[in-house]
Image 1 (tube, helix red, strand yellow):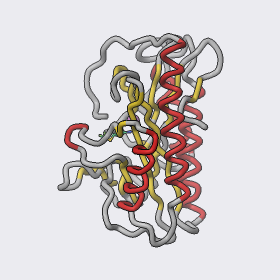
Image 2 (spheres, rainbow, N blue to C red; image 1 turned 180 degrees about the vertical axis):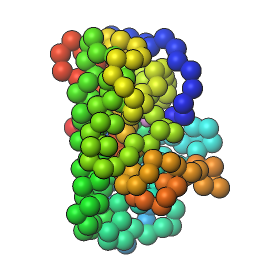
Image 3 (tube, rainbow, N blue to C red; image 1 turned 90 degrees about the horizontal axis):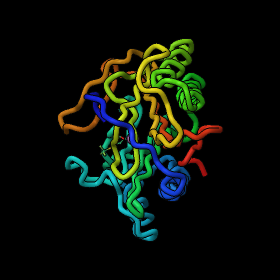
Image 4 (tube, rainbow, N blue to C red; image 1 turned 45 degrees about the vertical axis):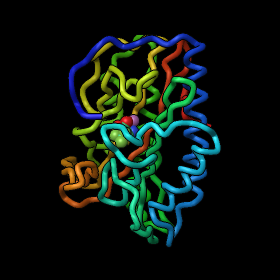
Length: 255
Ligand code: MF3
Ligand code: CO
């Protein structure tokens, strides 16, 4: 979601968190199925078709389709595409990387998660980009604890990514998630510690770092959706929806 103002952060009951868990398990299952279909020769629209079938079987609502006019269930962002890539006839080939992002609505609650997967074999440096992006997500999640501040999440992500020689995208951020796909607060993947709202049990956040191999700037293509790196470097994206609890962060979108 784009950057904007901040509002009250809704605290969810444990009953609501279990509903969010149910929605996010469905997202995780479908993403797993899609991941298993990523290989040379498969097009991104093939992945969309598989996803359509999976949401139909489960009788859930794809959350992105129709959101601000977005026409597909998933976003498929290949190579230098950062986020919001649209499924197309583009055929994946060995050495590519593809981020698959899926949101669904089920029983009134949303799930949202994304993964980046290599197509066939990729170079060591590209594998490192994917690994750093995923590890950065988990380091961010690890900050999502009662008493911490919102910016501790982004600070942990940025610190790790930059220490590894990559950059964090600034133009898109994570978000609260619940009975809407995007709720307050915005969750930047960068910043300094000790700023923003104090984290409380019951807050539910979608944390979604986007990491570029080169510079952090992005450009939106003429289709109005696809964000690409300005310098053409590769980009990786991981997202989990998580709940803050009195114990460990609860990763709702992990199987
Ligand atoms: N995970 C992304 C987000 O929360 C995907 C949104 S795609 C859109 O912003 F089509 F719904 F915009
Ligand atoms: Co999201």
